[in-house]
Image (cartoon, helix red, strand yellow):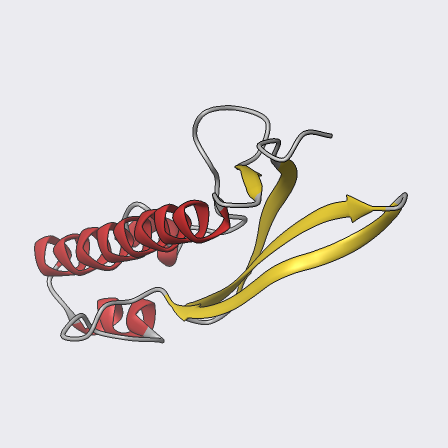
Length: 120
């Protein structure tokens, strides 16, 4: 390998209640090696936190839908920022591989509608 070559690092995540672990793994001498691990809150300050979906039961439908959109947008934007930072931080040594396609997917996203959060 040349001095300018980078090692591929696969990036994955495990989403929990309002936060996620992001992990980058490569191989070294044929063995897996964790090169980065980050625990990040996914819901931005000022956005209702967990368990926001229980709060939707007490809201009018339009307000519940707005809350779910706000939380979902916050999660997606925060995850995108974490992944961008991770790619930049790994870049000197590793090329971050974000899943099988161009769009990285979180293993869990908040529901898209109030009816998805609380099916009848």
